[in-house]
Image 1 (tube, helix red, strand yellow):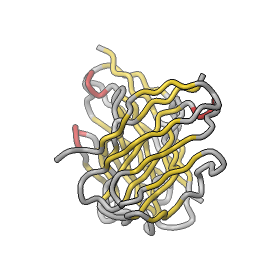
Image 2 (cartoon, helix red, strand yellow; image 1 turned 120 degrees about the vertical axis):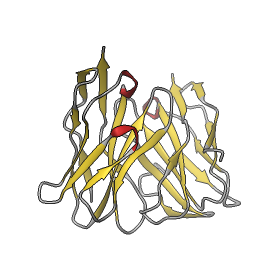
Image 3 (spheres, rainbow over the protein chains, first blue to last red; image 1 turned 180 degrees about the horizontal axis):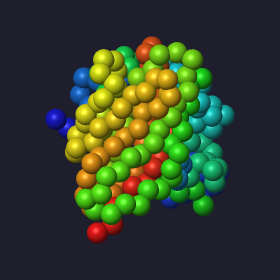
Length: 115
Length: 113
């Protein structure tokens, strides 16, 4: 069974530029999550989708971050414009559904460096 | 709101020695508890989880954890570590309703020969 795929794996941009990350969850998984992991810290949930609807985006900085999952499968996370403090690893995860008993499977992450 | 505290940011240990990684949580409702491992340049992998039932939970790679409700703790243990256990370990909690994980800051386990 294929795991959660993310691209690109690494990205370096200048501050004020825009960047987008892509995630393909495990086939059949209805719930998709985006996490931000700053160096030396644990992952922090940014947004949770159930199919193509947003379940929780309370920690997403909406003035610069946006995410979509239009067809309920793949998802993109965008930052526009980027700030230095956005440097982090962005992790995508998926689970069968939103129930807490279901394991979240994580992708390898995209490491973003903002200069 | 829930929170997770991992008391040790780094734990150095010699190969074949026992290890305990500490985790404490706070929440106003019932929670589920998880331990994840992250190897360099990889995503997180689930080691074990506590949902209900026996407070002693066994996971992969010889790890186990014990849920202590009165002390709000979920410490991770392994009786004998290997070099390959060197990684970052994260404790996480989610409320019974919804599947949103709150992670601790992580503990770097460094196994020395």
